Amino acid sequence: MDSNDAPLGYDAFRRTCPSHTVLEMLASKWVYLTVCALRRGRMRNGELARKLEGITPKMLTQTLRVLERDGLVRREVYPVIPPRVEYELTELGQNLAGLLSQIRSWAEEHAPDIKDARARASANRQDDMAVLP
Image (tube, rainbow, N blue to C red; front, side, top):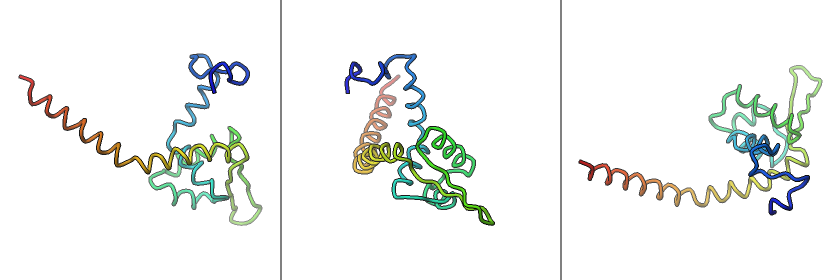
């Protein structure tokens, strides 16, 4: 989609475009991974915490709140003791998850290529440093 085709005149390349807040939210690796994890269906907080290795409880809570606020995740609280809370993607979240899943697949497929390129760049920097007086 060309910026001329953007809905309601939105253009992410413009500094004042409201879509920047959406892009900032999407740039979070935890938002990204949480949406991808929820693509398979409803999950409880503990299930998400186990799936998202390395996320702290505080960060998981913050991430879920952001996704719920932005209409990407639905939170359902069941009136039982102890309370049971489940999270699932909304239709908007499912739409986003499809795009993010493609990026995740690309990243997993090309991770060795990126790793090799980084190693070459690091070796070249080391060679350049050795040449300096």
